[in-house]
Length: 397
Figure 1 (tube, helix red, strand yellow):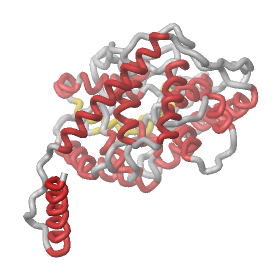
Figure 2 (cartoon, helix red, strand yellow; figure 1 turned 30 degrees about the vertical axis):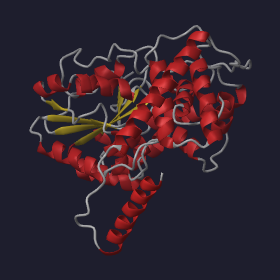
Figure 3 (cartoon, helix red, strand yellow; figure 1 turned 180 degrees about the horizontal axis):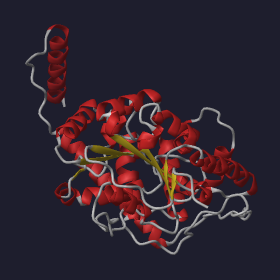
Figure 4 (cartoon, one colour; figure 1 turned 135 degrees about the horizontal axis):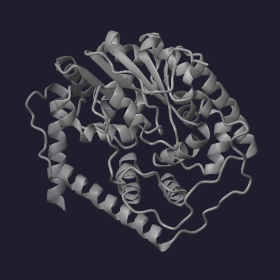
């Protein structure tokens, strides 16, 4: 029996010259791996006719600005100039194909989607969205949110995610980007469905997404390879629990977002991701029966939405269904102690992060005071008064 024309178990065809592949993610579906592969191959890609705008592996701040949302924890507000520069670079290139990838775009509002497509050129955009099994996604998403200051334990997180939407930010962070029907409806208002591809992630085939991008961008086989380094590996359950408990310390003490960014995200999590996994508890427990029942319903809706979407599909939507394929687990796994090796990684990361934070603060303090050119009226009086008070204060010590 032949498949409907929109269901294509083989790779998507190569895009025509002048096309822009816009990758929406969403988060925890292999986005960072493909972004790093593109980033590390930037010069080779250009030689093969593909423009991947830089300079980093993904345009995070530019994307936040385009979407009109805040920055990640501890970062300064996003600058719209970065989005404008990316758009200018995209419009200026004479390479035949372009790729822009940002997993935050799956959470774009209708207004943000309208702006992004208009700025990049809706007529030449081909969207790519990746769908992943929800029972695999939940633990991955939990540990990712733990790296962003969340203090909920894994059982608490699952219970909250299985509950109805009560307007909580974390609930939206989990489900909004993985509501396939809503995401496709939103973006198809600006990009025709025949210019949208959904890739059904295969947990046993980590090369599926690189192969799909390779095919769509008309690249030689094997061009896009996930980086061999381990700097983006997921945290183990014990590692995530250790970070979560540090999060609670930060919350209890009211420490700042920048302190968290430097000490925990860049420091502790950075050391853990760059280290070999320890012998501590490696995987989180499975899903309890009540949570699995919700996942079964959502995964059925996820697969059905893709089958009925009228878009190109790479992979088999039915593989997303969990009912009867995933068994509930009732025995919780508690992390009450960790190895000395994991403890040492946490301490090492915290010290490195604190030292880096200290260096940055000293550098800020050594910056020369701003000049007075262009300062007028009340502002000038305030600035001069402040300088006098500081000078008197130094002399009186």
